[in-house]
Length: 326
Image (cartoon, rainbow, N blue to C red; front, side, top):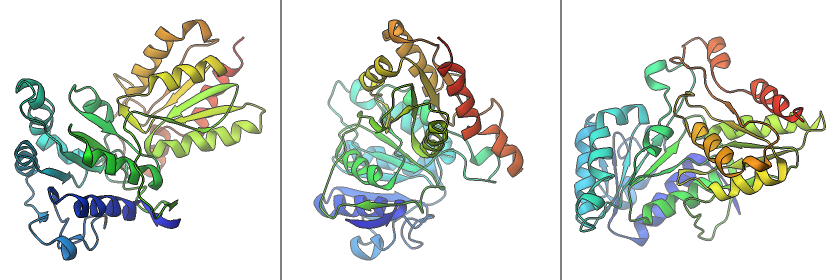
């Protein structure tokens, strides 16, 4: 086991897959000469050269389209968006080309491509650079959407994503690139679509994913002081969702709170609340409660950011609102 940062395991996953398969290559803004905007491709240009680690112009629509075409012709591109906020410029290629090509070609063309980069807020970057896109892309048939919460999962899930024959949206966070974890030296893969119980509990299930898992875990820790035992589930992927894991947990705890950074309308938490109440209604002792960002563009002032985003206080209040229902 070796301690590594989130950014390091992203590089390791890409590097290992590029060594394994000559069809894998990385393309995006500043990924080569600058070693990546967040240093997640450090040293890759030196090892693989400019034909497999490609700096692009500031033209997301263009290089996303190049990636889709390359994938249709048998390669396995990794397209880095400096932030998924910039993927809006390329969204036609992601949704109308990558996601639909296999179906519209009658199975003649697969699109084994990974679109990766950070999603969500990263502090004082303003409303245009602080949006969450997990639920946007998860709404699209043909895409798989992966949102790891820690370096260990990130490496195993990214390697699996690169090997997948379908287009994968792989979402990170600028606020997690420095996070550390112990990583095995031997190879490992984590399957897409399998969540994980990261803390066992009996009184309530807290569900989250990505960097907001830190909020969920801290809330669970604080709840222990009030003798409330929370089970915490990390979804890991939001398309497909591990519904079976959620239902089984609710059968044990009889209550659920979903914590998610995205806005509340048509969020991943909305889908989870519907599915659990539809498929585990007889086990619920209270409605499923959601904790989302407030329904407005993220402010710039740090004091307002703290209020708008999901936090430990709001999560604890949500848990107590269902824990005391009998």
